[in-house]
Image (cartoon, rainbow, N blue to C red; front, side, top):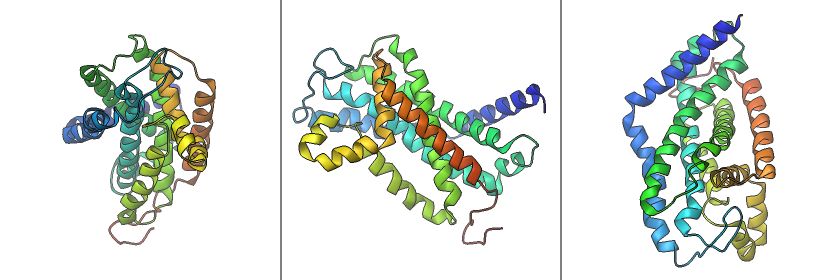
Length: 267
């Protein structure tokens, strides 16, 4: 296989994901409803209760909306990654992935390219959310919109690989939604997305340590620091390491016909 073959495959998968996204515009709207609801409605109620002190990467006191905006960016990627994993399973059994996996290209390349394509769509939604967040005075530095891009890509790959790993070992798609919620909500709520970890430590030390071991916490911190032009090597390092582990487990454990569709038997 030549480099041109890899490139054509990469472009084809990216194009198909964008075309699917364009045909499912309600998915785009629904992906923005959740974070905007938190940003506009919940933040208004929590603002007086959860005052935010001066903590890195912020140089002064900030509003609660400013604090949770990076966490809500992570929420968009988290939900999209799990939905993308479900669609990938359907594609694997009944759609394009079934044909794609028959190509001579290496399976890890195909899967990582698919994860990257889903991540690019999620990142586009994150930037739309950040633009809408300007309406409630969430104004990171202008260069922060560019500096946060590597953190967004890394987070999308980590969560996409996690979704694929879960989908790989789910034998009945009817159970996937329940497992998805079992993963999404603990990862999101037991992280630094909605409240600083020092507040969690004051409330419950054991919950604080659970948050520390949650990889989503470090992904959110990587986004938060990058958005405000600060470097957090520990957050990036942990997120990158977890991404590699999830990706290796997902690509090596992926089987073309592991999942049962509508109560059928796996091949």
